[in-house]
Image 1 (cartoon, rainbow, N blue to C red):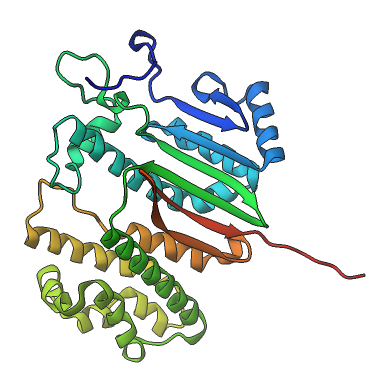
Image 2: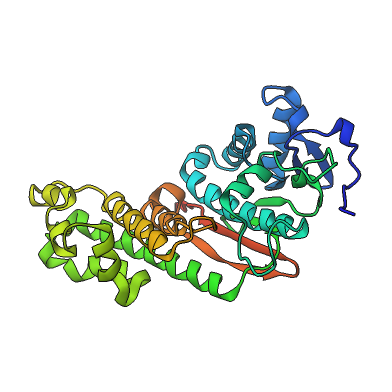
Length: 328
């Protein structure tokens, strides 16, 4: 029989969000954000420089609202800047947790790497029930949850996201490569701000951004996705039209648009309509954001390659805090 934990089903709290501060545990669902109790919790977080948040699903808006508030109490205004990073890491963690839940319930076979997106959505929104059972599948195994640990150590702000299950080596390598690609795009973007190279003078660099993932199949999928050649597409791109007018704009949205079309062509060609098919852009965008906007975060930033720790997968990132030393 499934492990339903110690909660009474009749008194079940929808989408429980717990905060752990030292040895104390708080159920944030029952604490109003404008209350004196919540303000006291925030003051304690700032003093302790460490807190952890635990939840089963981030689908309700209040989950990230509370996470943002807590983040901003470590560094004012940081939540908006790291939102895309946190959401990508949480999304991946939830996907892994739900797949394990689906396997345990017999919905997904052992050989499948991920549950279908429709199943993932239903489970995360408390809409999937086993027969003759009033408890949503999301809560059948209380240990299968998301945990975010936030702490300051050695002038660095650390975020660690923990989920159930182990990440495979090939997925670790994929994430590492996509993070490197995002960093490469950021370096190119920053150089372009000063060099303003036209397409002819950076053609190889741009092609390599796509070859990084598609290798010798780039031209094959490009032909499936677009009615014009790689060269024609970029020569006529609004990005390079602006560059020719000495106007710099971020290259990333143009890259992302083409990347999305290529992924759609790949999905159609590989015929994975019913299975989870990763968009692939999340880690690229995260790495781009944290590298391109280092001045917003502090001295530096780094996305960590997810690693296995016993029965858990731990991902995250680190932001270096700025320091000012004045000699008198």
